[in-house]
Amino acid sequence: MTASSWKLGYSTAWDAQRDLYSLRAMIPHYRNARVDCVETAIEWEWNADSYTLHDEALKRLIGTWQDGGIQVWSVHVPGGRVIDISKPKYAQAGIDLVGGYMAVCARMGVDKIVLHPSYEPIAPEERAQRIQTSQDSVRKLYRSDVHIAIETLPRTCLCNTLDETVAYLAPLQGVAGCCVDVNHCQQDKAQDVITAVGNQLLTLHISDDDGIDERHWYPGEGVLDWRAILQALRTVGYQGCFMYELRGKYEDPANIRRNYDMLLEKYGT
Image 1 (tube, rainbow, N blue to C red):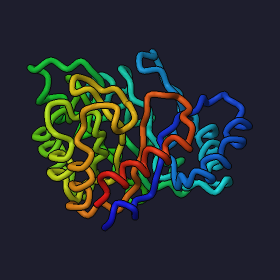
Image 2 (tube, rainbow, N blue to C red; image 1 turned 30 degrees about the horizontal axis):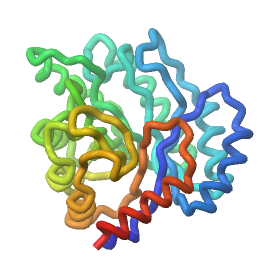
Image 3 (spheres, rainbow, N blue to C red; image 1 turned 180 degrees about the horizontal axis):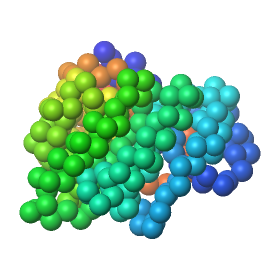
């Protein structure tokens, strides 16, 4: 698998109440920049007291991308305090919401969701129980037509280290895979996480960081070793999308294409 074979993608969220006219106007710019696919989402507030399944809005959002000739590679489902699938008090609310989003994805022909395994903070003494609850939630969410990609996360969230990510995924083989967010890998090298996840790697979030915390900068603006990351993707035979997830709410797709071409030129062989 050569780096140039990866589809180029961009992760972007939209307000459930927003008129999609502006999105329709932007889609030709994605096509012109040769952005092949997107990860899309309905915007949410991390600390909201409740969450609504915006199923009709999600259908419209997915359909708008599809009608414009852009593949919806994945949907990033909401995460937050009161829908934390790792916390017994909130796990069922999270399962209900995520399950609803997965049903919409199945109807719209989208076969992947990206799911946070937890919210934060998590105290050390709670960690084992939170992992178990999170895994149990993922098992309840399983359906054969929509793959669950568990995202690697920073700070005290679950799946914040290579070892914990591998241990979390091991009993979920055939139930869930992984979304490696390379700018969340502060405690290990991103390339090592990719290699360790191996055939459970379903998708990526691509951006750069400062080695201290997530930054969602363009690759090359931070400290990540992009030559090693690309080599790790080739080593595990990754054939998915090279999905940018950047700090800006609405990035110019031409800038994403330029950055991707730069990475391939410098590190793609």
